[in-house]
Image (cartoon, rainbow over all chains, first blue to last red; front, side):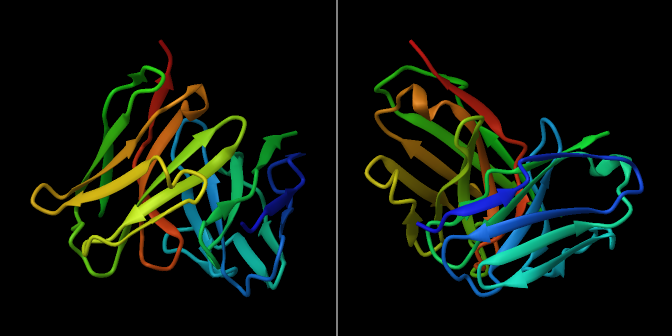
Amino acid sequence: DIQMTQSPSSLSASVGDRVTITCRASQRISILLNWYQQQPGKAPKLLISAASTLQSGAPSRFSGIGSGTDFTLTINSLQPEDFAYYYCQQSYSSPWTFGQGTRVEIK
Amino acid sequence: QVHLQESGPGLVKPSETLSLTCTVSGGSVGSSSHYWNWIRQTPGKGLEWIGYAYFTGITNYNRSLRSRVTISIDTSKNQFSLNLESVTAADTAVYYCARDSRSGNFDFWGRGTLVTVSS
């Protein structure tokens, strides 16, 4: 199975900050990497697919980049509603696997 | 807008079978464009993909659960179901159903249902 490792596991930031979350795959996965946001008590929500394709309705302050094994999710100008958990997930080979998550907290 | 809703018992005894159903509205489980998935989440293991079913009857399961899992589709009711046999406390989790546009990412999710395995 492909292992997905996110860093950091948590971070504290202020409204307006720029935040970067990294995801590393245990083997090359091309651009087949997806990002999800999960608010407490809710289901994950797909933010970005194929490493950099922003989903319809997702704010443009979210962006993703990467290929191979290393990927990054960036949130420009953090908003109050962005404080949540973020997960990466590979869709290169079954079984699909997720990172352990990154908690974005209010500083 | 596609809507998915999980239903089923919130408490299952050890060694018994966990059974959940996902009812889909605003879309069709008979669609040739989508796979219908189950995913679970625990504080310890995080998000774990369980498997999917396709309207043709094709299924794909996580090898870690393959010996115990069955996912099936009922096009007449626009539902799909999960059966997980011989459960233990380790199967206690929030279970989500989710749609996948045959690309391995999950664009619509149910709200999730907590299933506790306990006697």
